[in-house]
Length: 308
Image: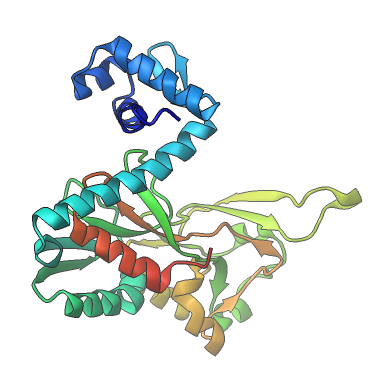
């Protein structure tokens, strides 16, 4: 690659992705649009692959472009952190950090880690909020969120933090007294409970049989639309209803490890599999991320992230 243009062409590529148009990138970099176009062409020629495709006025990243953008986002963020740390060595150790997490994982896993992180940086003011309701965490001023399920907002960065298998469960008392439950369609004969929270499977339960179909056919998925008999946005209330035998519910493994072991709740329809509801670290972007936020992300990653 031409070393004279390497960094400037990478800057041009990142500005193109952020702006979405040649003209927008040119304005950000105070360059002529033709200079932006030539910089992209030089980079693509040097790499031997196309990075960006044109669709009318829109720019679409190729697979190679997405891979380069993801890698450069981390590299540029670390460069920004290094400059920030050198210009203000105390920045990483002070200031305010506002974090929100779902109730169940927040109480059991996140709160102890935030407390130990705070001991490492005693001058840092950390505000930890535990909520199951849906929130616009950027509008509400949060620096970091630990959410159930991956957010759909493409402007956010989401990093999988913890695997979380889902189970259909009920109390042993409910199973003894309720109608037989042998296949997915039988769910419609039962009382169903719903958790109305970010990422949860609310009123549509997609169950996939773990048994292959006839003549080697792929296992069939059944999307069971339920009409919840009871709904709550509080995971503690939801689990209490399930333990009390109020009906069937979909729960994450992280919430019911102890219940399944003690058999206060049992896994029903074990021949069916629900999609995971993994936990994600969510933040506004990799670039210009405060060092204190990055430190907490790396700390949570180190203690909870699944093995590569």
